[in-house]
Image 1: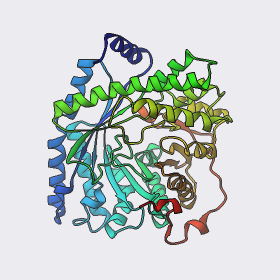
Image 2: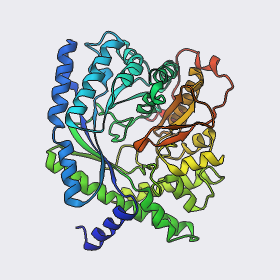
Image 3: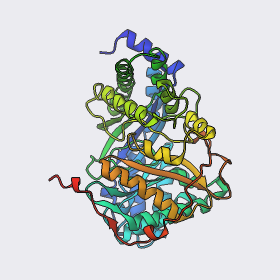
Image 4: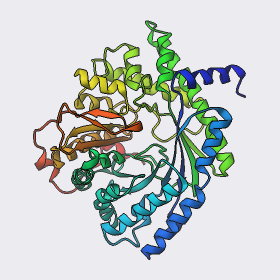
Length: 454
């Protein structure tokens, strides 16, 4: 039972502390749409999505009205398109037609984004998977709502360095094709190690092949709620600090659980998971970096930042799993630069560098996220950044990711505006020493010894 006090407290968190449900995401399997005829495949995909998700936006709006809980995004994720299109698509251009179908379906049902223009290539690439990866620049340049991801590594299989090299080139090409919008296409693409099957957040959401035909996954947020709670325990011990974060995460997750159950009931689609991730926005007071400052740092990036982030991430998970039996996705603390005003301030102050962000990803929810870099950064350098982050995920048995944006025509110190939840970002310097010979080797980095656990 939810008590009157909890209702009052939740209302206060919504009104004063930027609490929201960041997304309701319907995961939809497209395995039953597979066809060797490309036209028939596209028709089946469009019909399936527009049938299953036809009431998603309306249902989200009804829940917002009934409970006065903001639901920022309504989204769709689908089965990785490299699998769905393998029988029909013989070229990158064939896959682009599917991206355009996904975009059309997303516009028809009124969602914010659709994810799953994806490939899973942690050990090797089929011809279809390589074609999809090569199609990504064109697909993201010609669509508005489609998000793309590629999983290039895992703890069990190692890192597919051929894919890492290719993706560095594709990110550069995407940046060039979307340079009129400050290379915005790159903001809709992420590369993973150990990608989860049930992530509701973009750009990395896809509907895994182990999932049901359709599921409801909900992502909650609330960095502002956590920061406000910590303001009341300034100077207290680590024990008090941790207990406060846990209790706050429990309350935030309860809101997400309520929304997920209601959406599941109204849509007649099974509830999947709650993702506990603290997802910041550019709004003042809705920042993960500000939480780190409240814990005791002058800026995110100061000595002690990695320890503070590890504490925060762990306590969020401990509190959240008491509020829901089905926690999944990424579940932790996101540290995107452009989407977090506190992170932006830390970069401008010189406290936060790309290297420090990489260290922080060892203990946080995802990885190097929404980072603007100079447009003349080499493809091999981007691949090297990806390889480093994938290695962290592989060795530490966790999900890591990279979403970097080489902004064509801009350099270090300039600012790029993405707008909306994507915010804005100062362009960060990148180590310019070459890794060409390393990236241009063929094959894959083998799995670590601790992967052999069967």
